[in-house]
Amino acid sequence: MKSLFGSLVYCIFLFVSDVYGTHRLHGFDPQKVTAQSYAQRRNIARPPLRTLAPSATDNSCRSRPLDLVFIIDSSRSVRPGEFEKVKIFLADMVDTLDVGPEATRVAVVNYASTVKIEFLLKAHLNKPNMKQAITRIEPLAAGTMTGLAIKSAMTEAFTEESGARPKSKNIAKVAIIVTDGRPQDQVEEVSAAARGSGIEIYAVGVDRADMTSLRLMASNPLEDHVFYVETYGVIEKLTSKFRETLCGMTEQGGPGWDPCDMGHDCEDMCVSSSSNNSYHCECREGYLLNTDKKTCSQSVDPCAMGHDCEHICVSSNASHHCKCRMGYILNLDQKTCTLKQIKAAVVVDDPCKCEARLAFQMQTQAALQEITARLADMTGRVEQIENILGPV
Image (cartoon, rainbow, N blue to C red; front, side, top):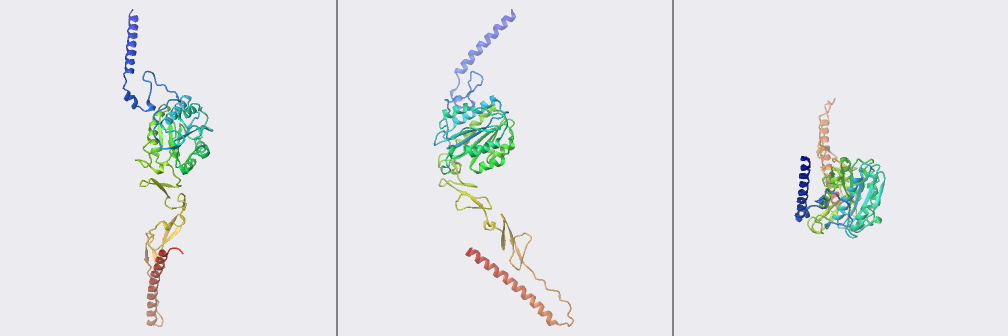
């Protein structure tokens, strides 16, 4: 009897809890739910469950136009359920972007032991079609050839034939790599080549991802381009982070707008000019800007880049050293010079005790020292005139 009474009380408790929960569901604060990021939204009445919905879109920001390529790891270590969360992350990212022919274009590169271009930049120019294509992506399994995937993205996905905009349009090229393991091939050189070609790389590590490899792949500054999450279950939280990065205040001429961020063709360094919303190219120390104002060549004369030699600068490959003019010696600092002192020769006793000969020797030595000093002074003046006139 007691058992029957206890069961009855328990059932009543469940019924009251359900009614209370339903009341809470209908009485939620709409503003609080709206304030949640898209990646955090969940059905309040049921346990968390998310599937891809190609027709559902979030409010997109007015992001700067991008040629964006996702490079996703689908090796054996990524379980099917985890790979589905990666696809949800891709769909969330698409929702945050301003997608279109003249806005952002997106491609997806899938990799394991092999690489598969799932779709190119020119394939889908609206969100519903793009998200539908994401739902059809299947894992490849096997190994983790991250370097090969980066190379394929650079040579196949980021080309004009595949839908990338030409350099003249100054559209930024961005790659987002998502991986949970250690690459089985080399990534440092191919990543450097990709960055050198103008591709900005973000590296996202999950769970067992090798942080050293992520740093080798990502662009600088590393604190803005390397991300880590403990599990695929929370990878969606990165959506808001990338939203901040890709959807800042980037209207041309507006606050935060950087002409270099919009794409450039500088081989080495791009320097923005906020006064006229333009940019120019510069080179690292030891390199000179070529006549095309874009590429750099190693300086043939490091001395022309500036030096601290008191007399003569001598170029040697990418460096230089100092020398002194005739009659001077180089000091210990290897930069300044001091007049060379000519010591009087030791005169042995002359059998003839000829004082006139000794006096003549001393006068000759003094005259030679004076002539040497004057020659050095004249040499310095000639060099100054040559520097003023320039090379003939």
